[in-house]
Length: 141
Image 1 (tube, one colour):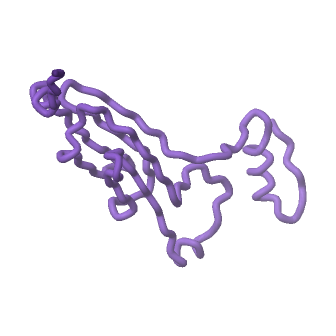
Image 2 (cartoon, helix red, strand yellow; image 1 turned 60 degrees about the vertical axis):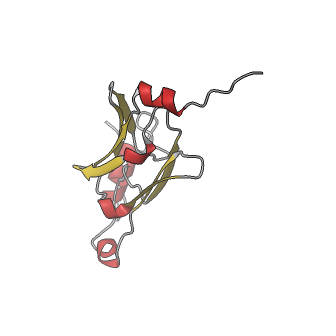
């Protein structure tokens, strides 16, 4: 048990005393957790995004063909007036992640959806036959 300090504003101090100590430190950087699953047909990327909607995401391929995920949650004035957080651990107001895609990714067929607080990006694989056709053989003379 952690002793609480007594003063006129006791409620926030109890939470700070309990949560802000050596055995339960506050995280200093927040970044969403990312899972990547590989199947024979595709890669599936899952990004934890609690409270986010599809309008909060911008997903595109950059000039090098890498997958760029931007997310930004803009809070309205009404949300700010409801109160203040005593402790807040998932607050991704702005985040960007660039993922280097494997060579066998079909960049033309990438799809994404947001459901139950998880962004899922489906990255289908190109079949080996198609990869071999795409390679240009150079004849040595």
